[in-house]
Length: 104
Image (cartoon, rainbow, N blue to C red; front, side, top):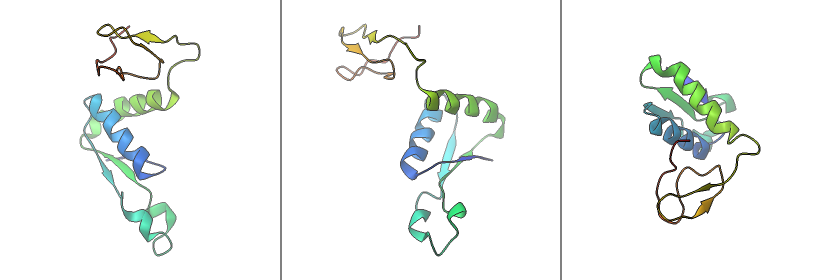
């Protein structure tokens, strides 16, 4: 089932990765069609995210909406529990040691 269009293949792949991290399987279609713009109408060349299981639609839409909005304004930086590095709130893993951010 088609979930959404992505503005470009890079963002489309990022969304696939975000959904995969949430346990939602999807595929990125039309990733190479941008080279055919002009020969094929623009609305048919956009990258598309397709869900493997349509039962994941509601969750997938919530996950993408959260990912697109980023952290809430005023969210404080967080400290890595493994190495002590202070990181900005939009990061989910420590850039220094790779440790994932713990749930709040």
